[in-house]
Amino acid sequence: MMARFGHHPNDQLLPSPGMAWGHYPQRRMPSAASVNWARWSRLFQKSWAKLPSLQEQHRTRRLSKFAHSCQAKILELEKKDRVDIDLLLHAVRAQISLQGLTDALALELTALVAETARRVLGKKAYPVQLMAIRALLDSTLAQMQTGEGKTLVVGFAAAVAALAGVPVIVITANDYLVARDRELIAPLFDVLGLSHASVLRESTPEERRTSYGHSICYCTAKELGFDYLRDQTSHSAESISVNRQLNTLLATERESTPLMMPMLRGLCMAIVDEADSILLDEAVTPLILSKAVKDEAQLARLKQAMDYAKQLWPKTHYIVQGSARTCQLTALGQEELSRRIETCPREQVSDQVWSQARMREELVASALCALKIYQVDRDYVIRDGELKMIDQPTGRVAEGRKWSR
Image 1 (cartoon, helix red, strand yellow):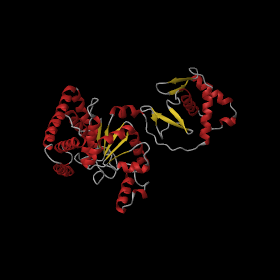
Image 2: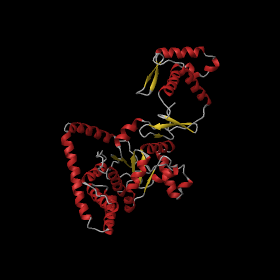
Image 3: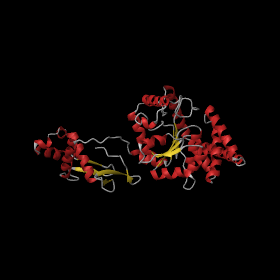
Image 4: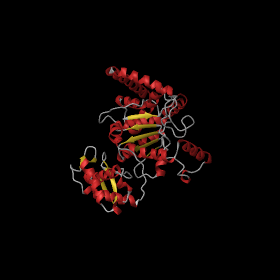
């Protein structure tokens, strides 16, 4: 698991839409001074990294101390009734609005969330879970073993950050986990007065916009990534700010101006569940927005490339690189392709693409990939006359995604 806050020159200012962060908070470009500081910090970290055991001991002691203090607070809270808990919660949130999420206030808020969870969910927070919550709030990775309550830790950390006034997005591996994890923690969110929602693959643009507007939103990395790209391609940072201000001043309904409003409220805080899968395995798949355009000339060009590809011989004219999922023409293959084009009737190769060696070789190499590498029911399926990609990590159909070319 991993959590990430946005960054502000004043660390006490928690990321949320408003005057300090603007209407679409996200990571800001560092100043020259911060770049220099980061350079010195990296040098220090390299020296510090030479003592990994000492570094790990220091971090473990700090987290253990937090967990021990939090357990003591929870024991005190067990003696209080629901009204007293609510009053303490309001008092801590008021202090956070003035001071930011300091270590002391993070301790108080975590203890309040843990005690509320014990009463609502019947789940007691153990020291290892309290340590993981603190680690996530520190924007660091937290590794937990199977059965140690990772889903609860993510929900508790999201609740703490949301109570501090930060919009939280919980990112997990697939739609099933999105629905399951949110449903598990929902009673706690409801008692704490936190709105929550989820974004699924079939969610409409308006449903997505509404869901991202809640205190806590569960979604997959793909849905979040594509929605962010849609915001960036449809709205500049300035237009997002202006549109939000206009909608606020004019009190217009969202339904009346769907195109003026971005999907997200910005990138304030994300908690990444299954960090190894999302940040490593899925990170190799690029997120590319595209729009289908019917191009008869391109279609004819692709069919012709497929015809040429079928006439080439493996190993002699081309090499299949299975690990890289590419096909590469050999020197003999390039000569053979050039010869076949020269002997074709002029009307069949009137397209200027075929007169340019690099472009025609890339087209035929792509056709060879379609023939020799990508397989139906493994890499893609055909539904209603349309090709739909299969997402390799999940084995499910990836709606809206296409291979380049």
